[in-house]
Length: 258
Image (cartoon, rainbow, N blue to C red; front, side, top):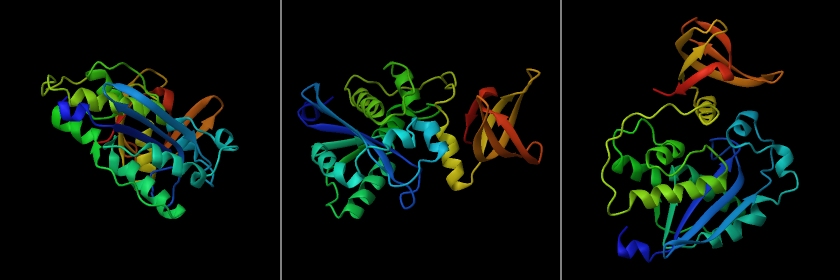
Protein backbone atom coordinates (compact mmCIF):
# COMPACT_ATOMS: atom_id res chain seq x y z
CA UNK A 1 0.00 0.00 0.00
CA UNK A 2 1.26 3.46 -0.86
CA UNK A 3 2.25 5.81 1.94
CA UNK A 4 -0.41 8.25 0.80
CA UNK A 5 -3.15 5.61 0.98
CA UNK A 6 -1.94 4.46 4.39
CA UNK A 7 -2.61 7.94 5.77
CA UNK A 8 -6.16 8.08 4.45
CA UNK A 9 -9.33 7.26 6.34
CA UNK A 10 -10.94 4.36 4.50
CA UNK A 11 -14.45 3.08 5.12
CA UNK A 12 -15.62 -0.26 3.73
CA UNK A 13 -19.39 -0.67 3.68
CA UNK A 14 -21.95 -3.32 2.90
CA UNK A 15 -25.74 -3.44 2.81
CA UNK A 16 -28.25 -6.27 2.96
CA UNK A 17 -31.56 -5.76 1.17
CA UNK A 18 -34.94 -7.31 0.44
CA UNK A 19 -33.88 -7.91 -3.18
CA UNK A 20 -31.97 -6.53 -6.14
CA UNK A 21 -34.22 -3.71 -7.39
CA UNK A 22 -33.34 -0.23 -6.17
CA UNK A 23 -36.88 0.92 -6.93
CA UNK A 24 -38.86 -1.99 -5.46
CA UNK A 25 -36.62 -3.25 -2.67
CA UNK A 26 -35.31 -1.74 0.55
CA UNK A 27 -32.31 -1.97 2.88
CA UNK A 28 -32.58 -4.29 5.90
CA UNK A 29 -29.06 -3.90 7.33
CA UNK A 30 -26.30 -1.25 7.26
CA UNK A 31 -22.68 -1.97 8.16
CA UNK A 32 -19.32 -0.26 7.74
CA UNK A 33 -15.75 -0.53 8.99
CA UNK A 34 -13.44 2.48 9.35
CA UNK A 35 -9.68 1.93 8.86
CA UNK A 36 -6.79 4.37 9.33
CA UNK A 37 -3.06 4.15 10.19
CA UNK A 38 -3.09 0.36 9.84
CA UNK A 39 -5.87 -0.35 12.33
CA UNK A 40 -9.65 -0.55 12.41
CA UNK A 41 -10.85 2.57 14.22
CA UNK A 42 -14.51 1.64 14.48
CA UNK A 43 -17.43 -0.38 13.18
CA UNK A 44 -21.08 0.36 12.52
CA UNK A 45 -23.84 -2.22 12.18
CA UNK A 46 -27.61 -1.89 12.42
CA UNK A 47 -30.68 -3.81 11.35
CA UNK A 48 -33.50 -1.61 10.07
CA UNK A 49 -37.20 -2.07 9.38
CA UNK A 50 -37.63 -2.07 5.59
CA UNK A 51 -41.34 -1.32 5.74
CA UNK A 52 -42.26 -4.45 3.76
CA UNK A 53 -41.92 -8.24 4.14
CA UNK A 54 -38.52 -9.77 3.45
CA UNK A 55 -38.86 -12.34 0.63
CA UNK A 56 -37.87 -15.89 1.41
CA UNK A 57 -35.23 -15.97 -1.32
CA UNK A 58 -33.58 -12.88 0.22
CA UNK A 59 -33.54 -14.53 3.67
CA UNK A 60 -31.78 -17.51 2.09
CA UNK A 61 -28.89 -15.18 1.21
CA UNK A 62 -28.40 -13.13 4.38
CA UNK A 63 -30.42 -14.99 7.00
CA UNK A 64 -32.39 -11.90 8.07
CA UNK A 65 -36.07 -12.56 8.77
CA UNK A 66 -39.11 -10.36 9.38
CA UNK A 67 -38.97 -11.35 13.06
CA UNK A 68 -35.38 -10.12 13.36
CA UNK A 69 -36.25 -6.61 12.13
CA UNK A 70 -39.72 -6.35 13.73
CA UNK A 71 -38.49 -4.09 16.54
CA UNK A 72 -35.72 -2.37 14.55
CA UNK A 73 -35.82 1.36 13.78
CA UNK A 74 -36.95 2.72 10.45
CA UNK A 75 -34.30 3.34 7.82
CA UNK A 76 -34.70 7.10 8.11
CA UNK A 77 -33.88 6.93 11.83
CA UNK A 78 -30.56 5.12 11.25
CA UNK A 79 -29.45 6.64 7.97
CA UNK A 80 -28.07 9.98 9.30
CA UNK A 81 -25.74 8.20 11.76
CA UNK A 82 -24.61 5.78 9.06
CA UNK A 83 -23.87 8.60 6.61
CA UNK A 84 -21.87 10.40 9.29
CA UNK A 85 -19.85 7.25 9.99
CA UNK A 86 -19.09 6.92 6.27
CA UNK A 87 -17.50 10.36 5.97
CA UNK A 88 -13.98 9.41 4.91
CA UNK A 89 -11.25 9.98 2.35
CA UNK A 90 -12.29 6.86 0.47
CA UNK A 91 -15.23 4.46 0.42
CA UNK A 92 -14.79 0.82 -0.55
CA UNK A 93 -17.62 -1.55 -1.48
CA UNK A 94 -17.83 -4.87 -3.29
CA UNK A 95 -19.97 -4.38 -6.39
CA UNK A 96 -20.17 -0.76 -5.31
CA UNK A 97 -22.84 0.20 -7.86
CA UNK A 98 -25.32 -2.04 -6.04
CA UNK A 99 -24.67 -0.75 -2.52
CA UNK A 100 -24.32 2.91 -3.48
CA UNK A 101 -27.45 2.70 -5.62
CA UNK A 102 -29.49 1.53 -2.62
CA UNK A 103 -27.82 4.07 -0.35
CA UNK A 104 -28.53 6.96 -2.75
CA UNK A 105 -32.15 5.83 -3.12
CA UNK A 106 -32.56 5.70 0.68
CA UNK A 107 -31.10 9.20 0.98
CA UNK A 108 -33.47 10.51 -1.68
CA UNK A 109 -36.51 9.03 0.08
CA UNK A 110 -35.37 10.50 3.42
CA UNK A 111 -34.58 13.86 1.77
CA UNK A 112 -30.98 13.67 2.94
CA UNK A 113 -27.89 14.77 0.96
CA UNK A 114 -26.21 12.00 -1.00
CA UNK A 115 -22.90 10.71 0.32
CA UNK A 116 -20.13 12.53 -1.55
CA UNK A 117 -16.95 10.48 -1.07
CA UNK A 118 -14.65 8.89 -3.72
CA UNK A 119 -15.53 5.21 -4.16
CA UNK A 120 -13.41 2.17 -5.06
CA UNK A 121 -15.11 -1.05 -6.12
CA UNK A 122 -13.12 -3.90 -4.56
CA UNK A 123 -14.61 -6.30 -7.10
CA UNK A 124 -13.27 -4.24 -10.03
CA UNK A 125 -9.94 -3.87 -8.26
CA UNK A 126 -9.69 -7.63 -7.76
CA UNK A 127 -10.49 -8.26 -11.43
CA UNK A 128 -7.51 -6.07 -12.34
CA UNK A 129 -5.12 -7.64 -9.83
CA UNK A 130 -6.30 -11.25 -10.03
CA UNK A 131 -6.97 -12.14 -13.67
CA UNK A 132 -7.99 -15.72 -14.21
CA UNK A 133 -10.05 -16.01 -11.04
CA UNK A 134 -13.19 -18.06 -11.84
CA UNK A 135 -15.36 -15.52 -10.03
CA UNK A 136 -14.90 -12.46 -7.86
CA UNK A 137 -17.26 -13.10 -4.99
CA UNK A 138 -15.89 -12.16 -1.59
CA UNK A 139 -15.76 -15.75 -0.36
CA UNK A 140 -13.67 -16.80 -3.38
CA UNK A 141 -11.31 -13.85 -3.07
CA UNK A 142 -10.83 -14.52 0.65
CA UNK A 143 -9.80 -18.05 -0.20
CA UNK A 144 -7.34 -17.26 -2.99
CA UNK A 145 -5.81 -14.35 -1.06
CA UNK A 146 -5.53 -16.60 2.02
CA UNK A 147 -7.63 -14.27 4.12
CA UNK A 148 -9.67 -17.05 5.68
CA UNK A 149 -12.80 -18.98 4.85
CA UNK A 150 -16.48 -18.37 5.36
CA UNK A 151 -19.59 -17.23 3.58
CA UNK A 152 -21.19 -14.96 6.13
CA UNK A 153 -23.37 -12.77 3.89
CA UNK A 154 -24.20 -10.49 6.80
CA UNK A 155 -23.35 -6.86 6.34
CA UNK A 156 -20.66 -6.39 9.01
CA UNK A 157 -18.78 -9.57 8.12
CA UNK A 158 -18.92 -8.68 4.43
CA UNK A 159 -17.72 -5.13 5.13
CA UNK A 160 -14.73 -6.53 7.03
CA UNK A 161 -14.02 -8.94 4.17
CA UNK A 162 -14.32 -6.15 1.62
CA UNK A 163 -11.76 -4.10 3.53
CA UNK A 164 -9.40 -7.10 3.76
CA UNK A 165 -9.62 -7.74 0.00
CA UNK A 166 -9.03 -4.06 -0.75
CA UNK A 167 -5.96 -3.90 1.50
CA UNK A 168 -4.54 -7.12 0.02
CA UNK A 169 -5.02 -5.87 -3.54
CA UNK A 170 -3.42 -2.48 -2.86
CA UNK A 171 -0.32 -3.83 -1.07
CA UNK A 172 2.80 -2.85 -3.07
CA UNK A 173 4.22 -6.37 -2.86
CA UNK A 174 1.06 -8.05 -4.10
CA UNK A 175 1.84 -9.52 -7.53
CA UNK A 176 -0.60 -9.74 -10.39
CA UNK A 177 -1.75 -13.32 -9.91
CA UNK A 178 -2.99 -15.81 -12.47
CA UNK A 179 -4.85 -18.19 -10.24
CA UNK A 180 -5.88 -21.81 -10.67
CA UNK A 181 -9.57 -22.51 -10.38
CA UNK A 182 -10.33 -23.15 -6.69
CA UNK A 183 -12.86 -25.75 -5.56
CA UNK A 184 -16.46 -24.72 -6.09
CA UNK A 185 -18.03 -22.84 -3.19
CA UNK A 186 -20.43 -25.04 -1.27
CA UNK A 187 -24.05 -24.08 -0.84
CA UNK A 188 -25.60 -21.97 0.68
CA UNK A 189 -23.04 -19.33 -0.26
CA UNK A 190 -24.23 -19.43 -3.87
CA UNK A 191 -27.91 -18.81 -3.09
CA UNK A 192 -27.44 -15.17 -4.16
CA UNK A 193 -27.32 -16.44 -7.77
CA UNK A 194 -30.95 -17.41 -7.37
CA UNK A 195 -32.01 -13.93 -6.26
CA UNK A 196 -30.44 -12.43 -9.37
CA UNK A 197 -32.30 -14.77 -11.70
CA UNK A 198 -35.61 -14.30 -9.88
CA UNK A 199 -35.36 -10.60 -10.77
CA UNK A 200 -33.91 -10.74 -14.28
CA UNK A 201 -35.50 -13.97 -15.52
CA UNK A 202 -32.10 -15.41 -16.43
CA UNK A 203 -30.77 -18.94 -16.21
CA UNK A 204 -28.18 -20.76 -14.12
CA UNK A 205 -26.23 -23.97 -14.61
CA UNK A 206 -26.34 -26.67 -11.95
CA UNK A 207 -24.70 -29.99 -11.27
CA UNK A 208 -27.47 -32.09 -9.75
CA UNK A 209 -27.19 -35.46 -8.00
CA UNK A 210 -30.35 -37.54 -8.21
CA UNK A 211 -31.53 -40.09 -5.64
CA UNK A 212 -29.49 -42.84 -7.38
CA UNK A 213 -26.28 -40.84 -7.10
CA UNK A 214 -26.13 -39.89 -10.80
CA UNK A 215 -24.86 -36.36 -11.47
CA UNK A 216 -26.13 -34.37 -14.45
CA UNK A 217 -25.42 -30.90 -15.75
CA UNK A 218 -28.53 -28.83 -16.39
CA UNK A 219 -29.41 -25.30 -17.43
CA UNK A 220 -32.45 -24.09 -15.53
CA UNK A 221 -34.50 -20.92 -15.10
CA UNK A 222 -35.31 -20.51 -11.38
CA UNK A 223 -38.95 -19.76 -10.60
CA UNK A 224 -39.04 -19.89 -6.81
CA UNK A 225 -37.99 -21.69 -3.64
CA UNK A 226 -40.08 -23.39 -0.98
CA UNK A 227 -39.78 -25.74 1.96
CA UNK A 228 -40.81 -29.39 1.87
CA UNK A 229 -40.46 -30.47 5.48
CA UNK A 230 -36.83 -29.79 6.38
CA UNK A 231 -35.75 -29.63 2.72
CA UNK A 232 -35.42 -26.46 0.66
CA UNK A 233 -36.63 -27.00 -2.90
CA UNK A 234 -35.88 -25.01 -6.03
CA UNK A 235 -38.68 -24.83 -8.58
CA UNK A 236 -37.28 -24.17 -12.04
CA UNK A 237 -37.83 -24.71 -15.74
CA UNK A 238 -35.34 -27.40 -16.78
CA UNK A 239 -34.11 -27.09 -20.35
CA UNK A 240 -32.78 -30.65 -20.30
CA UNK A 241 -36.28 -32.02 -19.70
CA UNK A 242 -38.19 -29.16 -21.29
CA UNK A 243 -40.52 -28.82 -18.32
CA UNK A 244 -40.88 -27.41 -14.82
CA UNK A 245 -38.97 -29.50 -12.27
CA UNK A 246 -38.24 -29.43 -8.53
CA UNK A 247 -34.67 -29.74 -7.24
CA UNK A 248 -33.66 -30.29 -3.63
CA UNK A 249 -30.98 -27.69 -2.90
CA UNK A 250 -29.10 -30.23 -0.79
CA UNK A 251 -28.54 -32.26 -4.00
CA UNK A 252 -27.17 -29.36 -6.02
CA UNK A 253 -23.41 -29.87 -5.99
CA UNK A 254 -22.61 -26.61 -7.77
CA UNK A 255 -24.39 -23.69 -9.41
CA UNK A 256 -23.09 -20.90 -11.59
CA UNK A 257 -24.09 -18.40 -14.24
CA UNK A 258 -22.53 -18.71 -17.70
